[in-house]
Image 1 (tube, helix red, strand yellow):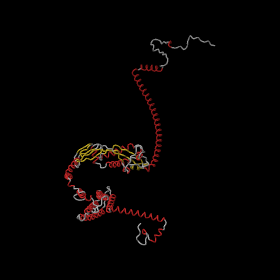
Image 2: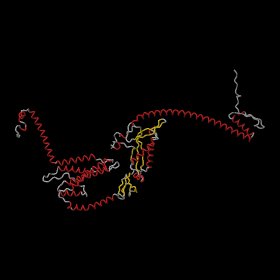
Image 3: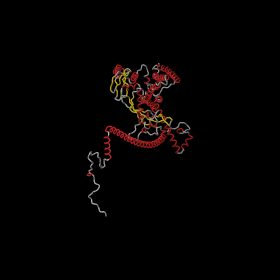
Image 4: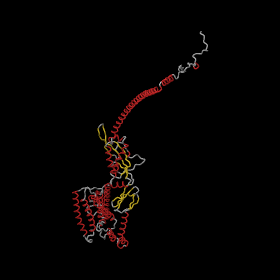
Length: 577
């Protein structure tokens, strides 16, 4: 260890009057001093390493990288290509005027730097290029502020896009700062300006991007591109080859490929002349002819309302897993794509309204005819919005005459057909070219908050309707039985009356016939009737008729052989005891 040079001090700069006590201290104090010295040595070593690293990299490099990173952060914070137009009015004009004043000052500085000789100020040219880049950004910003309005979008978008210029310069500066760490240091040569920008050097008129590259190659590597024959030939043949390629590409713009699921409307000089089917087609090149794409039989499903969940990215549900939330149709919760609708209602003799949630979907496609394809292209800017607005108008008009009980009951089956026909009629009247394939009523129910109350009311109505139906059935049964009995009695009376009438009519006819026969036959008819009556009355009796008139002159004779005697004359009589 070296000795201390100052008098009155001990080693390591400790005063002499304190040296003896330190030497006489305990070992604990010495250990504490060693730990403190170790920490100080570490800080000193880190400080020396940091200073050495900064000297090696260079403070200018760190400043350049820091400003480049700051510029990138600012541009990233304000980058938004979805900005809408805004009316800045007086404040915008004031800000634009301030930017013009700043641009005028920068223009003076840029002219001053550009006029500086290169030998007197080598950095003036590079600084003039950076000032020129800043000047362009300020002028474009002032232009956007002057023309900003609520119905113009391009000023805001242009103000954001002009940030690409400082973004490119900042990235170049950051890359130069990183690469400068690996560049060798030459103490004999004056260091070049690190903040020279190749992108800013391109902001000149006429633009010569290859000239800067040629100068860099010639100055750094000694390569002169003008002495290479291939580059000279390429430079001469570049414009003719570019013209031929451009002409060929322009001619090929008239060849159009139509996919299998699409069609194309061919416009010639802005007038539609034909509908192309799938395949390759040749027409006039752009802009004299162009083809507008149209769907060919592609089927779409559209809901009448769009929720926030539809706009978000939806994950596919596994086929073997639980059903997705969209399949839940319980009334106690709101569902995706449901829309509230006001419908008619009745409470006794009073008319009122009700609110229901419904999910109505339409399955549609562009018509397959050429006229439908043209109508969908030229008459409809947004087909889904057109279908939604038309369906909303039809639903409001149709539900004004329907009640909730009818929609949940017998009219639900025909509701989809009625809505589909009405919407299709309106779309045809608008000449939209849309064909509705199906209308599906996914769900119709009361709002989720009133579901339980409606369940109770519906249960009470069902019970009351059941009692009413039961009593009406009993009354109808009794009425039918009474009608049956009355009908039977009436039929029996009618039959009896008809029978008596028929008998009377028959007797009348028979009497009339006998009267006419008597008038014609006289006594013979009477005898015939007399004999007929005797035959009818005595048809089953064993009779013997005695009439002297039947035998003429002969006396009547009785043949007893045909009669059974009342008693046997030969039978012996029994003696009386």
